Length: 375
Image (cartoon, rainbow, N blue to C red; front, side, top):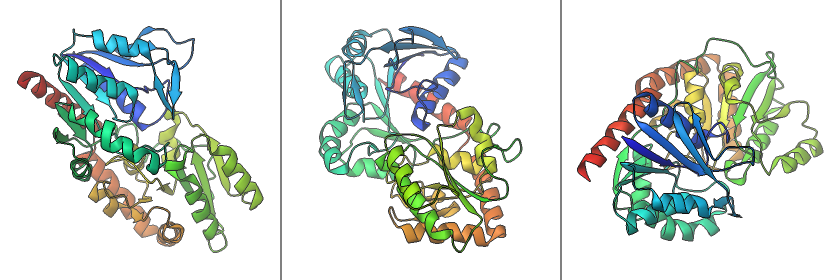
């Protein structure tokens, strides 16, 4: 197949689960013998317009304006509208202008089938009251131009249907490489071995709610003096978090590590006693949780409606913004070593069976071939 992948963000130029998914899917489909081109945004002037990366081609165009974190590029738009030599266009996330363009191309030209992967219904950078009108108009329209939409879970599919998305939906679980993320191997030197290490690998943006994990951990320090919190990630809320941590005298046990390279993340998960994901929106199977599971590290997460049901059962889950609920869930893992160990081992078994990255690639590719043949 000749695949044009349209993605606003691509690893390693951009960190994050969605950007890595785009990279790894392109890399592995190229290794299977498919011709993969990724159309994206240039992040800095030093990046070449066209580049071969991990077996696939990256084509970058300059953005001319940024609207609420959504870069708009006329060059990207022109390339997309003129591209007729591909068997399929696969756009990632309805949240971006590039995906809206891919939908417009399908609507106007109709010559190349369109797939859209839903990496999470809601934006984590924009307030819901602003985003909701977009979601029910342009966002839903973008999905409805697709020949097929990929969702990570049955809950994600149900949520998509409730928004009026009528396109065919295929549930393909997200996955990670269980040979890379393992319980055995080197530890992360910036995490204290003597502490009960709570790790939160999140971007410092409103939708990830980093202040919640800070305050939940703060509540536990008096009763559990061994607890320390490590936040891996950066973003616009960093200064606000630093001010709060200083004002409350929490510097000795709450650590903002900034961006940690993806190569170091397996060691981070191995060094963690617990992973906490307090986000108000995620895809059906967030990569953070899957990576923690593969390393046999238990987790506490927000009880999101579209989160895969088994992920809620395998780790602690509490309502978004419920600081007492997060504190209680974290404390339950501190107080019971057996519970923590059993949850971690069970998580790795589930990853091996259900969330193996090679399974994700195989199912995505087979579905893509089916759509091409039937269009």
